[in-house]
Length: 194
Picture 1 (cartoon, rainbow, N blue to C red):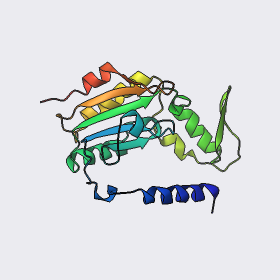
Picture 2: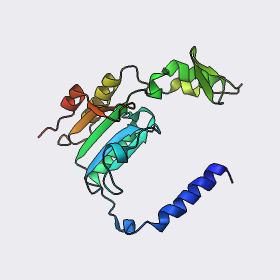
Picture 3: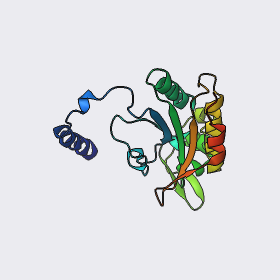
């Protein structure tokens, strides 16, 4: 067993000792909202949004992007689990700003080994085999944070399975300060329609 597995299981044992009545939480989130945000380990939505277990749905992926799967989760969150407001939150200093679709496709074509980033950009440190399949994926990279938040809120708003009465808010989380900064254009395009 790896050290990480041992650490996780030890932490879980401690957690279960103080679990209390959390087993009685309902499936629908108590505060009736959802957050779509990045998987970056520096972001803790429970802390920056003041959440306790059972309060909200938190959907995370690379970049916090409105992928088909993220929209699927948001629609389930609304339709079956009663959320009534959604947040799209990207963040400063995001790894998705450090590469393009072409860079990722080429890295995967060369090798499946972990790549490295230095002052010259991304490069492979391992050798093949790789696969060209990565060249056919839109990796949803980011070249402008405010624009990516706007684009994602707009994509969600225009999706045919998203009810018009759900407000969708757009924000950027600043990793240096912990502050949520609204992207007004995104929130405007995400306004609920009556």
